[in-house]
Structure formats: structure tokens, C-alpha cells
Length: 150
Image (cartoon, rainbow, N blue to C red; front, side, top):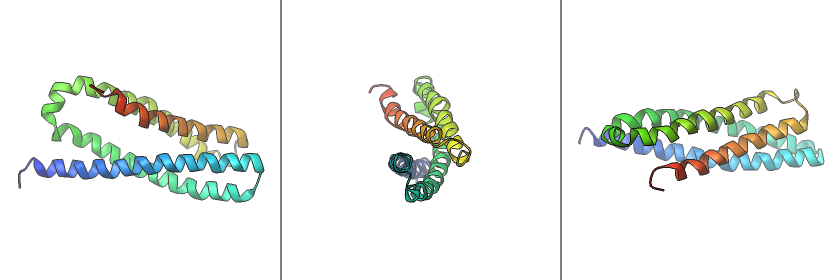
């Protein structure tokens, strides 16, 4: 087996798994927004329990998505060093912007949402979840269109 093929297969596996985590995260945050909005509107404690249950699964999925994303970024340079040499300055800037703006903003909103249970008013707590959802959608839909040639 070629010594270059094995790391590229590893990168392909990491990217595929990361993509699945991203898709599940986008679906779960949509579900959470709906459930917590229903809890705020109706006051039904059943929606609160469902929000907390699916919220725990969302946070686990989010952490695994972060782990695979970090590994994937570190695998990108060594596996495609020739590509990085030619388009690194163009490709690196949108990747850095996505990391700094979207990831940190989304993580801040999510952290405040996680630790804000029973500490914040319900409307503020829901607004934080909307912030998580908006930054997640912006990150997912902005990133592919910002790549060169698209």
C-alpha cells in the first residue's frame, strides 16, 4: 500500500464521520429550538424534559463533532501539503474565520445555554438556543460557499 494513500484514507474516514456529526447537530438544534419554544409557549413540563434529554444528546454530538473537526484540520496540511502550498493562503483564511467567528460564538451561546438552566429567565435561555442555531446554520451554509471557485 502506498504511504500517501493510508493517511488520505484516514482523512476520508475522519471527514465522513465529521460530516455525519454536523448533519445530526443541525437536525438536533432544530428539534431543540422547537421543543424549547413549545415549552416557553405552553409551559408544559413535558417539553422541558424533552428539551433536556435531546439537549444532552446534542451536547455529546457537538463535542464529538468538535473532536473530529480538530483532527480533520490537523490532517489536512500533512495529507495535502502540495495543495496547501498553492492555495493555503486562500483556503486558510475562510477556515480561520469559520473557526474564530462561528465556532467560538456558537460555543459561547451553547455554554451559556447549558449552564443557564434555572439561572436565566426562560426567554433569555431560549434566545441563547436561537443564537446557537443561527450560528450553526450560518457556519454550515456559509463555509461551502466561501471556498474558492464556488
